[in-house]
Amino acid sequence: MRLFQKYFCAVAMSLWAVSPGNAQSLVAPTLHIKAEEGSGRVALTLDACGGRTDTRILSALVENKIPATIFVTGIWLKHNAAAVAIMRAHPELFELENHGGRHVPAVDTPQKIYGIRSAGSPEAVLAEVESGAAALAVTGEPAPKWFRGATAEYSPSAIAMIRKLGFKIAGFSINGDGGSLLGAKETARRIAAAKDGDVIIAHINQPTHTAGEGVVQGLRALKAKGLTFVRLDDADGVGDEGTTD
Ligand SMILES: [Zn+2]
Image (cartoon, rainbow, N blue to C red; front, side, top):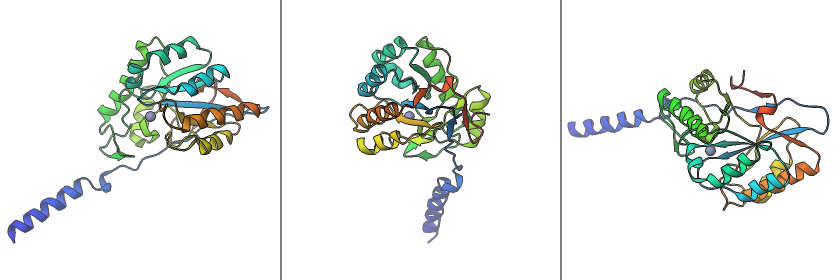
């Protein structure tokens, strides 16, 4: 009986240690750009988390002269030199910003977000942000001014830390491709629905997913409607949760 009690206690304690009661509640900030007279403008942001490059999207951006802000990680930069060279050859189109060194969520307590383990401590959040900026510096790109963490969810304390480092945090207002897991049709529909002031998020690192096809279709539809595209550096981005002010 005693042994059983001891065992039970140990199990209960270990359950308590990982219970959601210990997890911070996270925020997923939004971002809009200031509205403008005319047929409207939107900001396209594309994440390069890891993996490869979706050349369908990259080629379409170059052919259609669509400017975009690309959030790159240190991991992605290491394995995609050809894509980086294309982006750097078109500085009028591509702005490269900081998506972290190792693609770990900017959450300073240990927890999992969409199955991805968070940075887990203030030091690890700092390391993620700083190593992402350092990886970009090596490419010769201008120093990044925007940060977007893996999963785009943050603990409020991490947001405060990242702002202190001098970065604005890039939320979004339209989830274009659902983490690149949506089909082509739904992705195209979501992106084509963007209105003046919207900030779209999608992915440029999943060449085998059908979502990429939808990104291209959606962007073509927006262009045909007469909307213009701006990069985050060229627009006045207004975010909530203390991400830009
Ligand atoms: Zn990512």
